[in-house]
Amino acid sequence: MKCLLVFILYIVNSFSFAADLCNAGENVLFSCQLQNTKKLVSLCQSLSEQKRVFYKFGKLDQIDITLPSDSSPQPKISHERFGPAITQWVEHIIFKNGDFLYVVSTLQGISSSLNVYKGNRQIAEMGCQYQTETGLLVAEVVNLLSSQGFKEDKKFCSFCSSPY
Image (tube, rainbow, N blue to C red):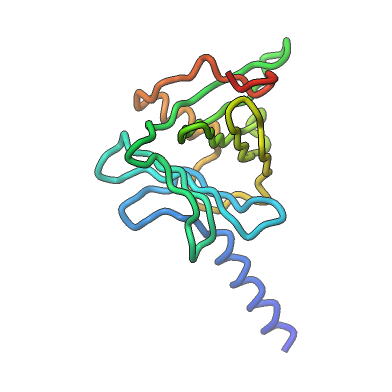
């Protein structure tokens, strides 16, 4: 009986780590479950149009936000250094929707997070509890998007009082 319980827990954990919000016609670039929630953030790239990358936020059974929409632009990328050492950096993938910025970031490639800004004010910061088994690290996604010609946002500053 104990072996059966351990096996069931293993299967449940394996399934949950493979979760993402991407559709069948999309490649999972990145996906993680956010700390203290059952919500996921996923970055998905269209298999038919390489220049179409989507930000998706929500639960497996209900996606709350998908960007870009018809009225919002494709994402931009950003690389910031915040100290004198070359190892002190943060990279971002930035999705804009009206007054809101949805920013998936990595600090030195070690940890990942989702930050939401409204206007000049940060309104949410959620760390990734774990990254799913599918997809890349945020720094790898930034490098991939850069190689595919996505624009860099040189004005974005996560350490400033305003993101711009």
